[in-house]
Amino acid sequence: MMFEQVVVVSVFTLVFLAIITEKLDKTLVALFGALFLISTGFIEFEEAVDAVDFNTICLLMGMMLIVETLSEVQIFRWSALKLGLLTKGNPVLIFFLFGLSTAVFSAFLDNVTTVLIIVPLVITLTEGIGLPATPFVMTVIFLSNIGGTATMIGDPPNIIIGSQVEHLTFMSFIQYLTLPVVVSSLLVMLYILYKNRSTIKSRNSSFSWLFMSNLMLEDMYCELEELKIPRSHAVKSLSIFGLVLLFFFSHNITHLEPSVVALSGAVLMLIAFHKELNLHHLIAKVEWPTLLFFAGLFVIVGALEHAGVLKIVSHSLVSITDNFLLLVLIVLWASAMFSAVVDNIPFVAVMIPVLKDLLSSGAFSHEPKSQLIWWALALGACFGGNGTLIGASANVVSVAIAKTKGLTITFKDFLKDSIPATVITLLVSTAYIVFLYYL
Image (cartoon, rainbow, N blue to C red; front, top):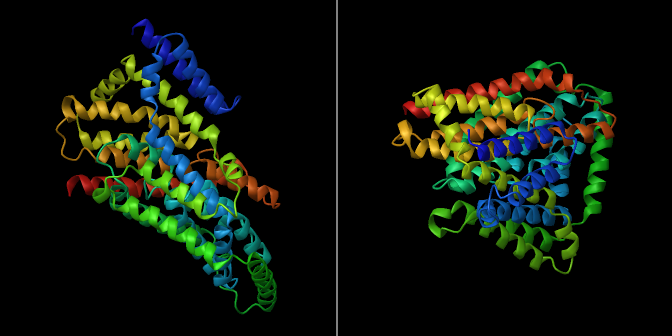
């Protein structure tokens, strides 16, 4: 390797290791690595700016603002309480209704936002009727990561893939990823239900359970009454959010970039609630460190590409096998294993240009099923997040929330359910990829 390649690879490796060890904030690490490469001339400033995918960053910013606005007007809390009242304290209904709702919410909202809303209520519901909350919380965690895989805006890896790969639209993600997400969600829920069949069952014959359940539901009903969300707030917020989704779905007709749609929706939300909400307060709540982390990471990946490192990696992948299906399955399982132990965002950011080069030249340049490699990357990166407690932000946040409620879930406890759940989803994904290949 040339000196330039050695230096760039060394910087990337050190940045990656620093992100894994979490000794420093990942944003500071990514920015330091990017600025080092720019200041030492390994990538020119203009090239660094070009390397930053502003479509991805603006899409994330727009969705963050929309989600924060919906949170501020209490739409999410209202929805969660309504769901809680619908269950009537029935453990089976709590399990299925909150599990499936988590999957649906995570498909269109940030996973962390979803678990922040759902997990506290699930713990309150289950402990309020004298049941252990752990299996219910684990279900919410798994379904948040699985559900987030279904759409282009459901998980950061999908946002990066959808923004950087041409011809992949919002509808493409739904068309190709909904089936494995639905099947995986149901199988994981059935696995947890079977494992905890002595806990998650109807208790209508128990007088003490009925008494506690009624007390808990009464408290929830009082909380719902106190929210008092004006009908105009609900109509405005849900109409604008629905409009944003409509434009995402109709990309083939409008040809508007997802980032433009998301930012436009955010601005409409801010205009609609300019009297009720403080603009500066909302903008301060945007996860700027996350956006800066993406920017720094894109610059480092740009330096790798500029130095020719990614081309070397793509050629190495080709040397492993000339069988495209086998290569796709390797991408699926490798993505899952990496995502279970490290942040999946850097991995996906690096893999996209590698796979692009792989598909644009050489043995796979005319592969008719080339799109499969992107679905394998998305499924592996998102489903792999369920592998360990540190595999996804939603996992860490959920366990932290549980701890504040007096419920401790250790790393070992998490693995007991996460490994079987992850294997189930990867087997479903493998079968699905093979099916699409031979279809």
